[in-house]
Image (cartoon, chains in turn yellow, brown):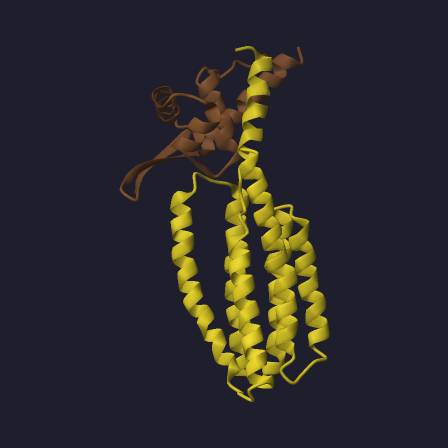
Length: 193
Length: 95
């Protein structure tokens, strides 16, 4: 093997490792639709059925969180390769989950429910924007920015309408990018990348 | 200009291919390396054992749904050796 051949081999292998099929968009779609349904149920309960405790629906997210834990564990075992990008992305979402839980806890503790939605929107923007940068996926970056813009407007809204802002945010940040990621994944798979 | 010697462990097509793949990712399964290098299982197995003996990679053997799974990971020594190999190659190329 000549020196030139060695360098060509290194370049070709590094490119092969980069071209792996990655994000399927499944978790973005899963959480996007779940949060959207919770928002609609909560909003409908308050505005159409005069049921003030519509927020109970949010407790269902804990069940799905447990399901996600098993889902990710299964995926981890099936995965043939783990990149540095995958690892950073996982930590971004772990940080998001911890911060989101703390924000909700602090909001409830100080009895400031009107602050919870705008802060949740701020939190949603962070991992979405960062994942967009890490995965080099513009739609997620735009989704993250949408969350922050919606958080500003949601501050001026009260009377249970804030959940509609959250619904709009998950459509922009998770559902639309989720379908676009899925489309890319299917395309890459068909091309045999 | 200093004339650097090429590391004989890395100066082999399949071992260099494996190291180039592992330097780009955090860890990879044996099947991933096999698929990307188009090598046979036997040959790949021998070459990764040589890399392990040199301390360039770490091999983790585990079970996944009752099937054996081999995961390979580059070590800090492996990263240094790879960097030195590339530097040596560059010194040859600029001659």
